[in-house]
Each structure stands twice: as C-alpha cells, then as structure tokens.
Image 1 (cartoon, rainbow, N blue to C red):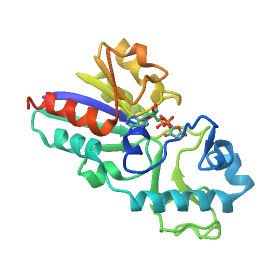
Image 2 (cartoon, rainbow, N blue to C red):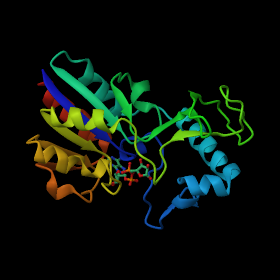
Image 3 (cartoon, rainbow, N blue to C red):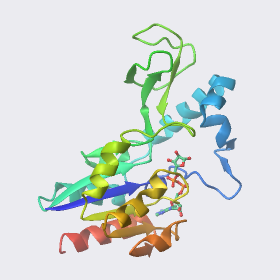
Length: 230
Ligand code: APR
C-alpha cells in the first residue's frame, strides 16, 4: 500500500473559477492581505472581514470540482493507495469531488469560530459581527480560517504522516507560505521522494525530485493514470 501525502493550494481550484492569492499587484480580490487575513485586520474592521469571507463562501458554493480534484478522489478510492490530502484551501471542492481523507490546515469557509471561547460550529451562509456564539452567547463570531500570524491546524499529525510517507506531492501552491512551503524540505530530510505539479515553477521547485509544469486539470489526472497503471 503506497502512502502518499498530497499538499494542495489555490492553483488546484483555479480552474474551478476560484481566484488564487498572489496576483502580481499584491492585492487579493481588491484588498490588502493584511486587512482581510490577519487578527489585527479583523479587530480593526470586522464588518469588512465578514463581508470578504461571505463573498468567498458564496464563490466556493457556486464553484464545482474540476478534473484535478476528481482524480485525487479516484486515487484515494484505489485499494493500493493510502492518501492524505493536506489542503491550504478553505473551499470544500476536495470533499465534493469525493475525497474523504482531507485535512484543512488553514481552516474552512464552512466553519465558524468564537474568538471569545473558541467554540466551533457550522458557518451560516452569511456571517455578521453581531452573530452570537451558540455556546457563550458573545458577539465574537469569526470565520474558522487560519490567518497570518496564527498557527495552522493539525501540524503534528501532518508532520507525522509526511515522515511516514512513500511519496510527497505538492499541487498548485506557490511555496510562499510556511509551514506548508517547508514540507518539501521536511520530506527530503526524511528520505521521502517528492513531486511538484504546478502551472509554473514554485519558490521551492528546485528542491523537488521532479517538477512538472502545466494546469492541474491536465497534470493531476495524467499522474493519477500513471499511478493506476492506465
Ligand atoms: N494549475 C496548477 N497550478 C496553478 C493553476 C492551475 N490551473 N493556476 C495557478 N496555479 C499556481 C500558480 O502558478 C501559483 O504557483 O498555483 C499557485 C497559487 O499560489 P498562491 O496564490 O500563492 O496560493 P497558495 O500557495 O495556495 O497560497 C498559500 O497563502 O494567503 C495565504 O492562506 C492563504 O492558503 C493560502 C496560502
């Protein structure tokens, strides 16, 4: 049974119509990342931050999985493969394509988190700063998204799986944001072979044993066909 850890980033959802983060102008949907993706930004203007993620949630709900998400679900269903998808994405396209073993290290648009008592619950379609926490009742609702300056989720588990893997594959991520950007080095030090599938060489491309360039909707199904011997 081949154990494979897959890291995915915004590039895998790009062809589903969800915009990636790092446009050359440094803006993200016309906002500065610091304004909408940091605890300080949220403290400064919670209305803006909620509006921003409400729009992202609506966009994710309107999108559908593409052949790259579908191919990973197909590989997971193969009895010869033990797959863990670690995604930096906050959409649910892996799950909707049929992947079951998915870990959202940067949180999810479909979760709500109380920043007063840390209670978590399913996000409503539209969130507002005045929404009370169902547990403590305080108006401290935020999206359950890991912002810059916060610790990504389930890191010990991820590192453990990475060290025990037979292969690490990175798909559609620019390699700019740690700790995910460091997974290729972690895998290398553990003697785990590495493969990158990305539209262009990422920041860490040269560290991978093999790097292929092209759209995820083509490269991922191609690679899965190779794995399944088709
Ligand atoms: N197929 C494959 N790769 C693609 C495609 C595509 N169709 N379109 C774009 N890409 C590649 C880009 O070339 C780029 O290298 O996907 C990468 C996307 O990079 P980013 O926008 O930086 O996204 P990501 O790496 O996921 O960002 C990491 O940054 O803002 C934070 O928390 C946020 O999870 C996010 C993290």
